[in-house]
Length: 357
Image 1 (cartoon, rainbow, N blue to C red):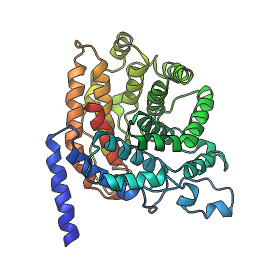
Image 2: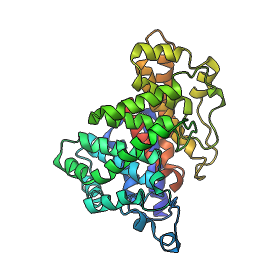
Image 3: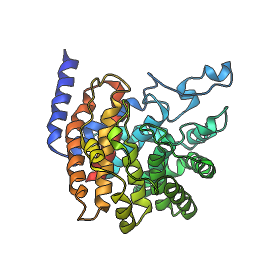
Image 4: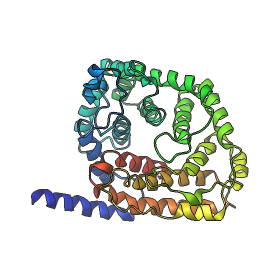
């Protein structure tokens, strides 16, 4: 009975958040509890490991991945770490700060990161593991640590360099060979990965990587027009493929070129479809609940794109309004679907809130 009362309290508190779209310490505290719970939780687990033998088929998730073994899967653990780092940076006085630091300090150990890095290439096809969704979040985590002024962030940043540099080397080797983009609305989406990689390369001043990313972005998306976004979403999407591509192009084109490009990109019925709220029929379903993530990613893409649109473009205001609507409707639902959403959705919510603030 006590557990039910606590859960109802959380749900009511979450519902009270629906009137606001700005991140504050109260929201940060509530959402931080989700990755704090799941980062050390090894099970349930989806390893996605391609085994070479009986020996490695029997390895526990934590034996394969000494840092990112919780939160159901590797990438969710990575962006759970990113979320906690960013919340510490935004709200240094969070009431659960000590618990967050304890969890993160246990993760950001040099020897553990070296073992994480060694996985990429140790087994058959493991050099493609988490390409490129998990890679993108890993670079977003590295980017967050690099910007932190507190010595603890710098210490953690140095500790994770073996893994960061491994991912960078794999990505730089892969890009010249990538002939076509992946336009799905789930993990392999190319535009999402390239956008986060671009942010990292820009912060780090890696001009060679920036050139690689910009060249591929233009090759894949510059000639796109009349995108059929009226067909979105698929039933388990957490990305809009068309919005992700536009969010990437907003980075690699200057404002004038982007506006010219965007004028040909959508027709009205596609905009109408993108601004419609996704229907989530069953939040206990691990795939269907992806559509809540779609609301968050649409929110951050629309706000990002809107910031680059000309004041004369009618979609500038419409995207801002739709972005707020997605956040308002979906933020309370994070607490309303079980572990299928709880192990990852808070990270999407925090990224959206930070990007729209």
